Image 1 (cartoon, helix red, strand yellow):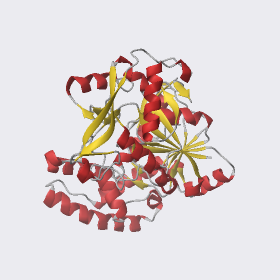
Image 2 (cartoon, rainbow, N blue to C red):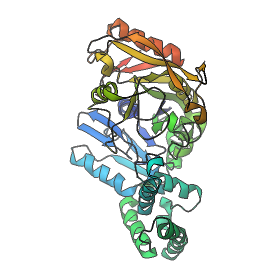
Image 3 (cartoon, helix red, strand yellow):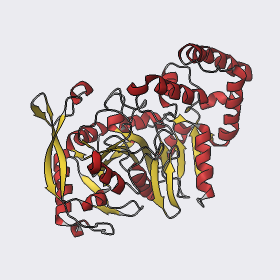
Image 4 (tube, one colour):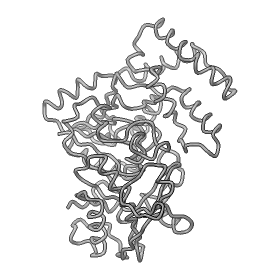
Length: 425
């Protein structure tokens, strides 16, 4: 069976933990989109890890971890990650890389940084990992696919020359930066070839066979619904689809094979980067939630940037779950809220004097003000509880209120960062 694990909101919902947990009973885990611009934090018997490209199931020796064709593949970062986890005692994972995946080039990272600097106060809050320039090139058909590393030298150099002619115009006239040369780019690609060659595979063919054999397959997404370029808070979005539906494309399987969509939802809200965030809170209130949150504070796993904080947003989450096609909601970091006497929950948006529960397009979202309902807190530590009925009454009331508001079943409740700190409902 194929299960997709995706986020309902702005990312950082706790997908890594849920993937790591469900990988225990899975055969194959696939990253199907995004790049090294976001991270998944995992805490297990080996320690604490921030993964950026590797799928979150690499800690089991019975799994195969796949980098799908939809991923923005930064080869040096992938191999740095592999060596990092091995150095910490993790057995060398079984990894396959799609021959159709495309590569993040060093000039993508440079162009990303130069453009953010040029935009200054109007920037997109990029992690400067080269993601937007990478996907721009992919869809402009001037990217480099892993399979091209094995092309003839003359053919590859001819393409490099064609591509960098365009890049050098930008570097010289827009950014006033050093120009690229054919030999420099070719040498980089040959270094990448040495690193990736043992892992390259026709992934869609491999998965076709795995599905026929009834293997348990996990599709792992990056970020969440609000960062999808079509259905999110455009233009403050990422550059690849964050939706479960894209999992079929980014992995190379038929869409009808995805039977279960686990959408991960945080018990409060957080976001990294710019963009509309209706239930955002500020000052000491935000600082306390940030410092208590996550598994050591709410700071970006990739950048270390402090995340923007907010109360739970039923409007955004209902929409985020709907657009994902949710079958199960995994509700995470609930234990963090145990310090609060009262917990505000955003149940509607006021836009131009009218209250709506429908998530609007960005132009209207800019005008939205949160409408809150305040629920009583439970004022106690819930870590260590393994049965739903043993949770404090106000804690169960909080879960059930949100479940009713979003309209999708909360089947898992995470009450700690560890792999098995989970309550099944």
